[in-house]
Length: 440
Image (cartoon, rainbow, N blue to C red):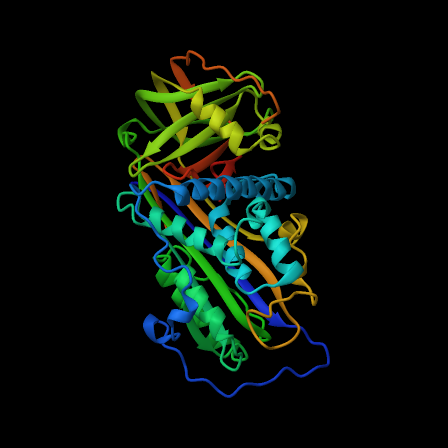
């Protein structure tokens, strides 16, 4: 029997040159960049490091951390907004990583100017921070957040960004240096026109970085691509209090009033943090991971009510749930499940106000000197597997919430929502819903 929860996410962005009857300038052929020799990819000079040594350890409390909490709160609300957009167009299982999408969009802040940059900032829900920040402040905050989370060895979260570049497409050295500085971005030059070889090289690198969890992300590639940006996040966590596989048994999971499926249901009798939201009529359970992280499981009182719950998700609501939790010994049953989802997010991000980035009006002049550059698509793929040992993964205003005396049995046998948070900075790593545990 497999043990552990496997959760990993990978996103990619493709950039192409729009055909506008104007020949872009063809730069001199550059030497092939060794993908693995990171120090040889770009020449990083002092000139491009105005935010050097911004990262501070957990114990170094101060203004930066307060700003970082603001940053993570706003990006979490972006995550809830993005999740709602996906949920509206899908009636089945969902799994996304807001952190990964935020990373990609923040990387494009370095490339964008003018209205294109403003739309990204506002779409990520970060516009309130804009007036008090310089152009590189938000990427610097993201780097600080990533460094603080990934230094937690017990949490075992790895995040990185890869850039696959058409061999005759010239990027500005400033973008190369800044993306290296803030995102540790790695670069590989290849020929998209030879799309069979390009697809092989890209899939091979992604497969290696995700430890075999995503062996073939791309089934096809556009020969007109100039830049393909990939962000990956691999999360490995272990339950603080694991389930005993000896007690896992086949039980009924009620998808709706008319349909049910048989699933392997995990069981344990343990102290569990939980609360009941009287207004939204749902039970909220907190299952901790080692390394200061946890999964929140939100179970509606009635099958199908998860849809109305999704409309109310905010950081304030989550905080109120956590603040009202009580620890009690209960019998908890929770289904094993595995999800694998892939989403094209261009329309979803467009719905959140990030529009120019995908059109000929995009201003990516911090990225390249070439004209008519636009992002063609944003794709995210995620895999999550939940079982006995843990996770291994490559509110209405004025809502009244009361802590309750949990029943002796909490049985998660109907569709539910789940969120995975890193606790130190309250970072929303993943969010999803399980409608049918037997479906991928």
